[in-house]
Structures are given as structure tokens and as C-alpha cells.
Figure 1 (cartoon, one colour):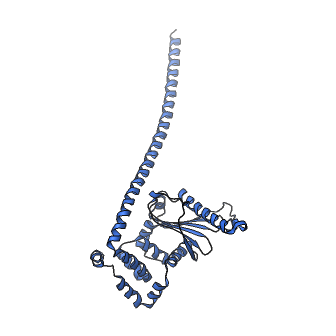
Figure 2: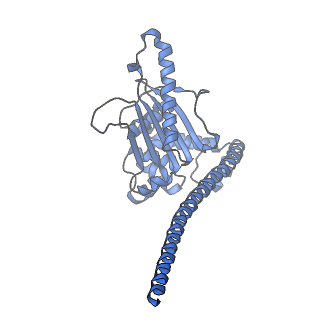
Figure 3: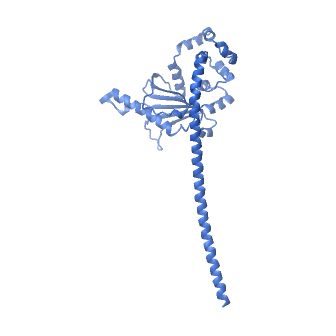
Length: 308
């Protein structure tokens, strides 16, 4: 099966070939043997949040989790970190109006699940000061329209602050990453740091860009090897693709319906505004016509008086 895929994707190597490359280089072999999936996510979150992150455990999504089947989610993982703060990392194919209200709801959901867990563990000893920060990290393959107003910025950090400078720990922080904008930037400026290496790994399937990534950061070979090994199972990949394609089609239709409805609603509002303005103008014209009729009547009366 590897030969079939290599016919179309020459850059794909077998597991044996990749392991030979990795273990020929002592540094690469140390990285490959030393990394776990948690460590990979730890490094990525550390770079995104600008602080050292240690993952304590991956938290399963519970029934209270706010969900929307038509959100075109690519990945959704919730982790608890060593300091007991919680991070939700999510990759969305489309913006789907996620950045504002929905993100706040996700963040509130994280706080609530942490509150329930900590209160259950501490019992009478519970204090609200036991509640740690929650981070909502969203990566967009295609970012929402408002992100396009910032073509030079692909990552946006949000936190709550006062208008006076008073510092109160309100716990909720957000990070939005626009992968489409990032790709435009990296094509012009190249990979400038490890965070951008991770983002390029997430966002590109272009062989040339992948080669540049591997030359600059050879440790990503191990990750590509895992992906290529999965691709060798053609039957499994085709089965996954067919399921995802059906879900994507259904979700895309719903997305388009929502977008069209929003556009129709906007046009209705514009027409309503125009009708209001038109009615006001018609009212003004009626008043002018009445004033003209009044003046004409006065003129007629004056002319009649002058003739007598």
C-alpha cells in the first residue's frame, strides 16, 4: 500500500525508512524517544500562552459541554495543567461567528466544570480562590471576517481588564489564531520561531513548505511519520474521509443557510430603514405641498381683494 501512495506522494517514506533517518541522528533520536503526545501539546500551549505549561491530564468532554454539531470542528481537546488551570484547544474549519459570544460560553463552561470538580474535592474546605484560570485557544483554518481587518496579525490574546487599572483576577483568557492569515505572513517572511513552526505544521499540506519546515525544525519528522504511517492504511483513510466528507457537506449546507439567512435579515433591515426614510421624506413633501396650497390660497385672496 505504501507504493500506491508514494506514486502520488513521493515525499512519503515508510516507517522503517523514517526510523532509519531519525536514528542516524543522535539528537533526532533523543527527541523522538523523549516526546509523548502530552509533551507535544505542552510545548505548543507554552508557546501560545507565553508561559511554561505542564499538562496534568486530558479531560473527557462531559454531557454538560456546550456543543454544536454544525460548527465544523476539526479538533477539540480539554486539558488540565499542573497548576490546575484548564485549557480548551479547538481547531475550526470555518469561523462560524465563534470569536465572541460563543467563545465566552465555552470559557464559562470550563469555569463551571472546574468549579464543580474542585468543590466536590474540597468539600467544606472549598474556597473560590481555589479556582484557577481557564484558557480558550481557537485555531481557524478560515478565520472570521473581522480578523481580515488585521492582515499583519495572526494571533490575538484577550483577557478581562478594568478601565481604571484595578487588577482583579477574573480567570478567563482567550487566544485566537488565524491560520489563513498566518500562511500569508509566513510565505513572505518565512518561519521565524518555534510557534510559527507548529502553526505551519498545523496549516499546510504543501510539500515545499513542509520541506522548509523539516529543514529548519527536523524534530517534526516524527510527527509527519505518524501521519504517513496512518496514510498507509488506505482502507481506513478512505473510510474516515467518506464519513468526514458527509459531515462536512451537511455542516457546510447548514453554514451556508445560516449565512444566507443573515444576509436576508440584513437586507430586510436595510429596506426597513429605507422605507422609514422614504416615509419621512414623503411626509415632508406632503407638508410642503400643504404649505404651497396655503400660499396659493393667500395669493388668490389678495388678488381678489385688489380687483375690488
